[in-house]
Length: 360
Image 1: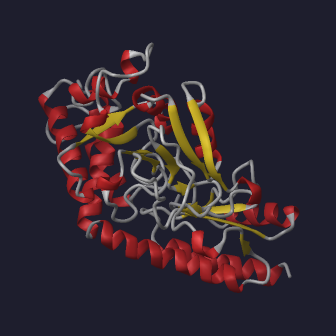
Image 2: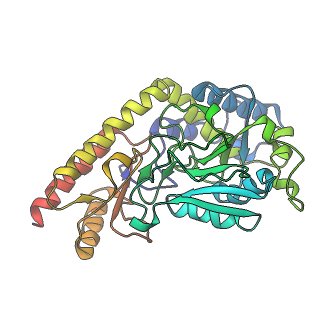
Image 3: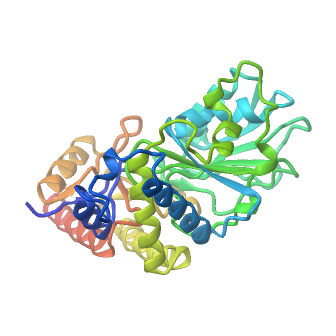
């Protein structure tokens, strides 16, 4: 069976070159006589894997020396609690709610202190990014929180909010490594890797060192302290060895591709192919304000639920899978992460044109 074009929002498409390498090493990782799936996380072999992965990520993102890279479990959703537990010294935090995941993070933070929704785009089904140039940031706020790219709704911050000197914390799950980023503008940025970086089961958190302390909320479990993992080099307990290994392969692939500047250009080209078609189509329409469109997640509709369902079904039969929109919004969504080739998007657009002609 030939491979399909997988437009899933996550777990998502991985580079074929990486999958082939992983396949070759499945039974015997580089002469060790064992698979990465079965080796000790305390072994010299694995130590090299995790150290190389971190070094390559630091190089790709130009991560400053005063930031720790943590390979953690529990996905992005566990960070919704871990962040307030570790950062809410004044028991106040400000949240910009631009989608489902930012909303869930805000709701979770309310368990630990005063979490204030200082801006939201919920009034228009999260189809835009609110103006964040002059926000009512709390004087006592420990941090300002954003979800930088909204997987479900297809919006993205093109400019970071003015936090008025307060710490910026960002969930970058679905735009992770899709373009260059200035890490020094954030206190913490983190991403679940299953969208744009690797297999499911891990989150990478990049945390400024001065934020990693024992001064956390009372009752914070040992496993929920950044210090626990930072002090142990992400090896306090058995980490997700397999995910770290595959992510490391993806980092090397990104370096071979030319780094994040090249990936941004490539991602802009891919997105333009799809958005240009949507802007000129008589049947399909994008659902996001043009200036706030994500390069990674592209939601669209026909305006007719039955037609949407037929499109998803016929697309799948033609080898374009996981195009059904999130259950909370319906319609369709094409996630076109780093590993999605340009020709995948071009072929999808050709199929959409054909569908439009046949169903006018």
